[in-house]
Length: 486
Image (cartoon, rainbow, N blue to C red; front, top):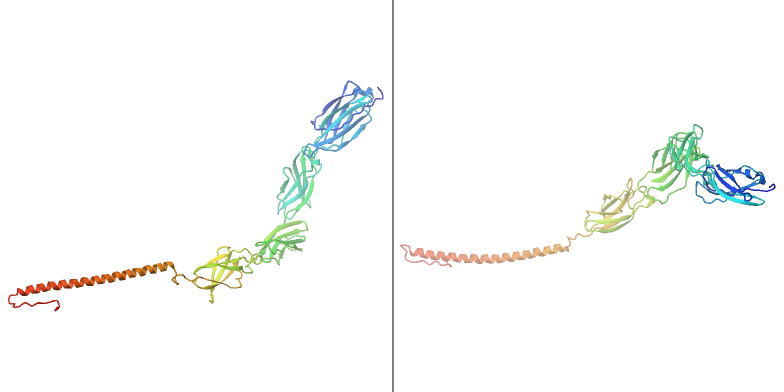
């Protein structure tokens, strides 16, 4: 049997339980089988091959080959890299396959052959987890205050996770030295460090943990802010102060937007630097405009402030006045806004000034809102008025330069053209005519009634007189009293 050649080739690996797996392979040249025990580590496999039954067959060469399939901790598809074949020119009892990726699945195929033939068997296994071999990605400070720093990060690259991530660990200390603080078992991808000192730079480290241990730390530097106070503001300046420091303070400012319009905003960045000072006046600014102010100490520790300059009265009047209608006592007018760059604040109301044309004294009315329409009431009929308008922010701006004239209409009661008045007049005339007619008829009736009554009275008196005279004892003749004589 001397001179026969056998080889064992390991071709690929896949996921198996982490405990040792045993496979039996029977040589085609011998009816008996032999054993291969496989033990996994984080970076490879140990193969124990029992060839005691085949020593007499002269087996002295074993070849190995391993193919990577996939990670077990993240889904990034099928792998394509192979481990270089290894050849053994002796009859080893133990073979080590190294240089593999932790927490990964492999396929292995074992081929036993000699000059007379060969036999092949495939099986799979997985490497064990290992601590992450790279830090979390994209560690950045996303927010800073006087006493806090918030950091965020992205997970460790899949190829370096080496197992399922179970949390993160953070360490930090002052950049110029001091004790190191640590927090562990942090879940998520962000964390806020609290109870820090203002105006201080910190060195911050973040590492990922998995079931095998803590990974590699990634480092960043970040600083807490230093406190900036706004002492005062005017319409064109901002006075700021801060705690005195021994470093140069770089001050930059830029107008972000106007608080009342977006036109004509100068967004050029301006800056200045000071040494040994704790206050600064930024002047030459625009009225009622928002500014972002940045102060940096020693070029690294920065703080930010947003300040709005004060409002003032508008620097121009409303435009485009128009007459919308009128009655005998009212006039309604409209106007267009003050140009954006001239408002100098939020317009809260308008002042309407008016007077009869030719008179000296103006009367004022103030609107109750920002509507650009107003009705002047209580005016005289058939009268022309001169009207002006001004806008109000924190004070009244200029009135319209050109006089605007509008007139009330005539009072409809003066011209007799009112329908109700005409009807009333007709009714009064008719009633007067009827009354006069009835008066005449009554007068005629009364006159006739009086005449008839007088005749009756005289007739009765004549009868009585005659009768009395005829009964007198000494009367000789009778005297006849006629109506005509009376």
